[in-house]
Length: 257
Image (cartoon, rainbow, N blue to C red; front, side):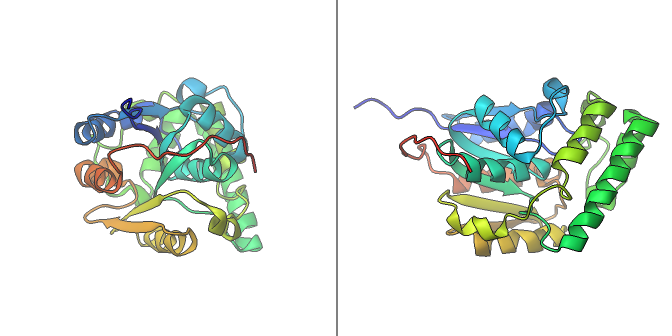
């Protein structure tokens, strides 16, 4: 019998980041899973895909087109895109790992308010430029656990004002339709991670666990929102410990939400 195909792991970055933001973490994960192929993908509006304009469903199409059949690890915005991919393209998502992610804002008024906030932020990026905006963005309390070394400012500066503004307007949480009622249909093994010092996304992580059939939730001690940057080794241990040694066997059937 032929050996099984090597496990593929696709890493999906957050807002203002690029595929390069995963380089250190990808190496740690590769050390723990030497038979896996670990690849990162640039999302629309970011990095090499900076000229692309896409909403969350279109971003999910872009992701699986470049990632193929694999385990998908998505952080923050990347987690939301990976979740859309699991719903729209379950034939490509063998396993799903969500880091600091949400299935959307339930309340219509809160969602509209967030959409207005995202629009104001997009306009600010266009007004002050990428460099000033990145400094403001990293000053957000959500990223208080990052150091100058782990904040990856130089990598974020590779993005353009137009690309980031478009991403906010098209894929911001205010634009995301709530997916909570659809999560019970997911037939994808799912791991949800959040930092112990990130109460908002820990609460959302527990809700995801309770809504996605068979999902598992873990907190990373000593970390805030960006667990893979703040505690990369502990995060790699959590992922490697959850993943099986062989890829999931599943027939490919064309499906789209």
